[in-house]
Length: 86
Image 1 (cartoon, rainbow, N blue to C red):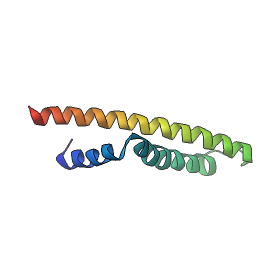
Image 2 (tube, rainbow, N blue to C red):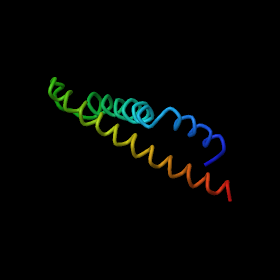
Image 3 (cartoon, helix red, strand yellow):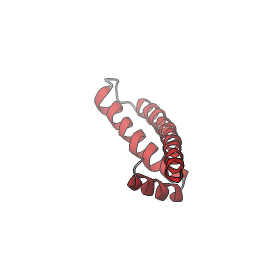
Image 4 (cartoon, helix red, strand yellow):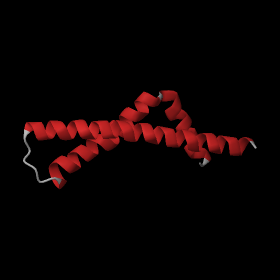
């Protein structure tokens, strides 16, 4: 992890995990995937139940993605922090 990335991660850490997951996971990944899959990829009829199901799937997926990215970034940060202290 580069020093600039470390600074950016420290800012994200200060803002909290919930905000990170919401912005990067739910909004950044989940909403984008919902739009792409529901309206451009899948050929199913666009009924309200279909759209609700897709929204639930992709918002949950976005939450999981955001949590996973938080974990990976924390791991990278701790590894880089340990290397810079050595």
